Length: 258
Image (tube, rainbow, N blue to C red; front, side):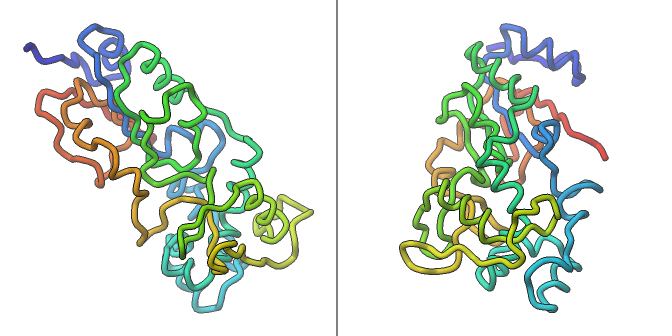
């Protein structure tokens, strides 16, 4: 069988290939740049979450603050969370509440994936984003793999019991202080959210922390399906995903440079 060809690895070349009959089985690997246009900050850019972290306002010990100051990723690290849930919940408060309110909508990139699905060309979307915007498209849920989980559901990190997300969001709004000074109705001090099942103070969105395991449903999917794809449109590849698709698979990388 004649291998599909990507004539030029440019915007026009990729668009032409996606429109062609040779393109019949598209796999998407999506990263943070897909959602930045929706108004959701990324993690590592000069204006991203880590660079703008108000460390001195976080509810933590002096030693914990120093760790976060030296390495901001500690604020989303599982070991830190199990010591105290407050830094994570305070940093995530605006995103939890924004997700609950439906503040952000899918971007043009998400609509591209949707269009490919409507044309029966989309095999799977693998996304490392936790904003849930992919799930707000018309793409069938079974074609979307949220590798790092989603902010739109909550569970206990200790026992795994899933919490009602509406109730969780209400408790975050009422019990977690606003370290970014955007919500005058927020409390002055934070209180963690207790699990209704085991009582642990470790309820959080169902997202993957550094040092944590990927969601079980990720491994339940047919990971091998990404290898024989006729084309793989990669917005940002993750090292966790298969690194060597078939040699004849055209690959296109689209990323945002800062």
